[in-house]
Image (cartoon, rainbow, N blue to C red; front, side):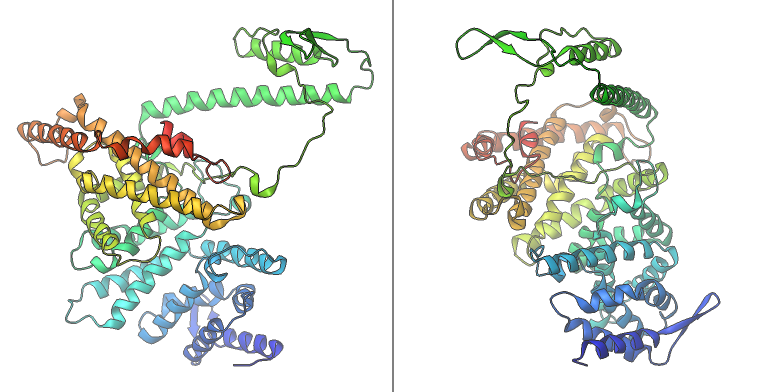
Length: 554
């Protein structure tokens, strides 16, 4: 390795040039490709705190021009294939991992962090390739077909690295500003999901989640599935393709468009009113009804409200509602002319913007079918394995986040789409409920000890988001218990595709009600469970928690 930065960058460019070249539609592998990739890995292991090697490789566009074409055509060369996977896995790891698990506060380091994050978003576009995912699926499938006696440690490491690579690609945050995609439009994430579907990765993930022999990959499988569904909501996904729901969505959208149009008209009229040079300087004085001043006389308002009153009348006519101008407090602003104080950064409330969007109908229907197959065949086995690993602490730090997310999402999906308590029975038990309670208390204690710095404290924000997720699981558990006791007419009918008789359905519903009553008897009369929500409301802090109160009250 070279110490001089100029010579080091020249050596990196030479290594990138020695990987191969394109000849028409084919990619020719260079004889020095293996040595060049080993050199690049060595440089990445010894890069500086500013990730200079990673940023240099990103500027050279090595992923799209060399590594992905190389991965398509080198599956026969096992050593070169493993080296390319290792290099891609290193280049696609999250930006926050490259900067020691925290967003840098230094100006130069933060600039480097943003550059690495932009490079990762460009890498995600390059991975939206069906042929690439088919190559990876074939390699993993051929390794999984081998028995345990024939599978070596290198084969297990290769499977794990491919799963980590896919996890890293799906983990990259969507580029909302760069893509400018609306609902029901194809985003980069949707393109990757469709490429995985066409290449057969969905069936491979279902096999990994259901197989007893592949339990060592359970955490990786759960992470990939949760990242696949990160932009979806269980309610919208469960109602995809439903005509009645589509009509209601259209009515809601039409009302929203009307409100936005009214708001635009009001803003345009306010702008024209402010630009009018012939407005009177004496707008008059007004008395506010039922608003006494300090002298207990009617409060006098020395600003013009005629324009705002006219706008309030126009809005009430357009919305077909009767709005009394006298009782409309919004037209009076008592803060006009007052000095506005800037709120300190560590005291500002957290503004959390979760990315949820509706994909195109084809992707929604594909994900809907995938979720139902996962619930039917894989949910209970993989959740049992993951829960066992979390209990024995045979996992990495914060791996319980994916367990909580999967539990909250799929229990809500099962409740809305087609409720079957036996499909989610692994997470409908008193021990799971107590474990969720322990997680809520644990995250709450983390917030108490890590609350300094306000919204700039990333550890406190992460603990608050995990607390919100655990409270959502707590709520979803109780909602599913209520659903188990209230049987609908659709629950009593035999659904097409189910190997059940009418007597079997009635027996299942009776056992379901008995299980729900047993869980309620063991949960609702415990003092520590009853005192949880009042304690959470008392300790609410808007600096860290955005949707915390909504989850508790609902």
